[in-house]
Image (spheres, rainbow, N blue to C red):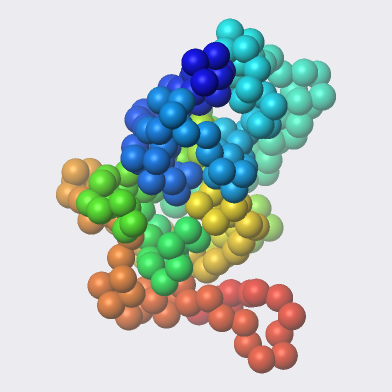
Amino acid sequence: MTDDPFPANLACACSQLPSIAEVCRRIGINRQQFNKYLAGSVRPSRHNMRRICDFFGVTESELLIDPARFADLVSLRKTAPATPALRGHLAAVERLHGLSGEMTRYTGWYFRYFYTFGYPGLITRSLAVIAEKDGRHLWKNIETGAVPDLGREKFVGKYEGMAFHLGHRVHIVEYDALNASSITQLMLYPSYTQHPDHLRGVQTGGSMRRGRKPAASAVMLEYLGARIDLRRALARCGMFEPDDIDDWIKTLIANRIDPGAWVFEIEEI
């Protein structure tokens, strides 16, 4: 298998992320097994190949082309210029900023809570911030902690996006900043105080670990303040058993569809 281009192309794709451990954590493949793929001693099963392709946003045939061509392909996808049509869509997003009033009081740091998509029964607590810059409200979210099925190996997830106040709701759209392979949207009830103690709503997305099945969950942002001890806040982030999370938080992020209901909705409290 010395002429097999797959190991070199897989290594090239992995180079877009901070570490191989991060790739394994996000795809949900054991690190020891993944190292065999990189070494070329083992080819992934059909199931794992599909997970790898979905994660990197490529096809299996692209992973098997000449490594030089694959490197060019990855580079082009990262740097492709905006077309006129795309610029038109971006202009529409810019207009939303002009319509997005009342966001100033939402700036600051938050803990974000939700039942984890990829690890059923666990609750994620991540650290997020809404910051105003040049008239726009930017969103950043960091997930960090230990991976439950990979021992105590640490992971870091970084997400960036924008926040809007439209139609009497707070909207947040974020993307995976490490490999641009996923988008999540939050729709939250607003707060009518100077600074919210919490914001509650629904988020949509999908776990790469579970085949990127479209999913939705309740989500809650707990306001921490305009300034925080960043290191201490990050140390509190991770995936937790429900017993380790306060009852009032679990009440706000419970995922329930009432008898007779046809859609998943979150009532304002």
